[in-house]
Image 1: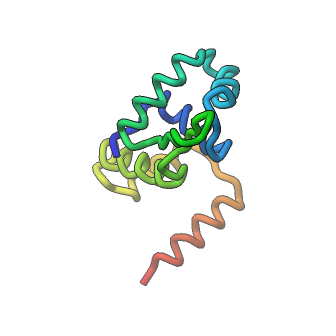
Image 2: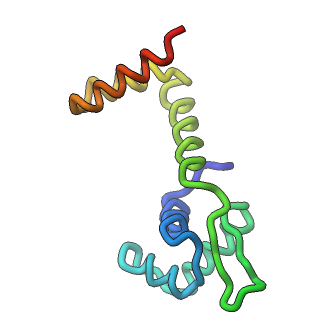
Image 3: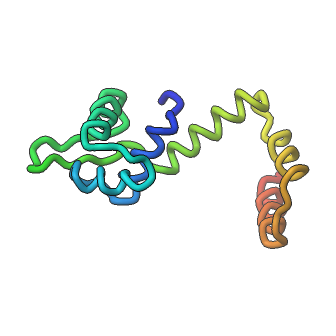
Length: 121
């Protein structure tokens, strides 16, 4: 899977939120945040189908559109890509940079410690 564009994330987000829907409902779901019209959304859906991101059930009337990839699969791919590009694959460097720049809650700190403890052999 190639890196998703911001617009592809937006379309997929709407499809994930609806679980799959027909074009008119998708346009209405996207319009407040994007201002896109029916033709724009259809163009994105058609391109995304060609890339293997969206399935179009053409047997249904009206057609039903759904995401072919899960939200978590896309997030995981994005994380791996970011880690490779920016931190040369070093998860430790990434985590250290975030912790130096952003504060975390005590609950988040405890969860991070628990995860690190589980990783130790």
